[in-house]
Amino acid sequence: MPSRWLSAVLVAPLCVVALSQVDAAGGVKAKDPALQSAIDARQKAIDTRNASEWSKYTGDDFVSVSADGEIRDRATRLKAVSAPATTPPSAAVIDSIRMFGADTAVSIQHSSPNSRITIVWMRQGPTWKAVSSHTSLIKGK
Image 1 (cartoon, rainbow, N blue to C red):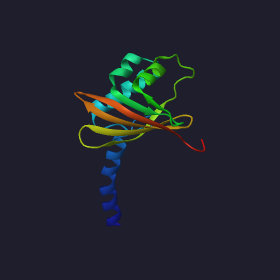
Image 2: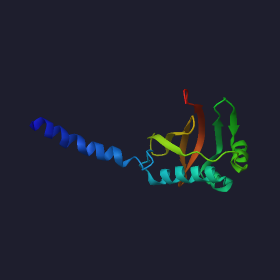
Image 3: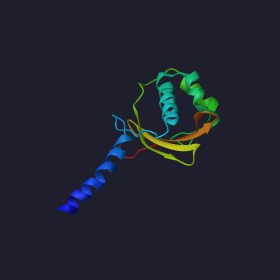
Image 4: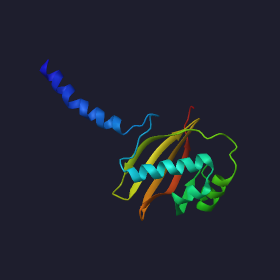
């Protein structure tokens, strides 16, 4: 019996720490508030088709690989972000965020109905910027 209590006491704090990194929508939050702010602002810019805001959080040498393998540079993606939306935005849910040193991170998110997007983030000066993204289709959805 005491070993069960000890296990509960040891596991409970780990659960609290893990859950503190998940927001109400079920997505993961970055431990770095500046990175989380950049992720949120860039996604909002995509959802609202705000090219100026998107540019603030996207590196000058940004490159994107689409689900069909097309490589798109920053200018091409900027045109797409600026264009009127043909479908309503789908909610993006962050599945994971991994830090690689103090200035590089990778976020993996999914959005309905069936895509997963990996974004590489780099701190450039005081601002986090997306420098690369890759979209994949999720099979069976």
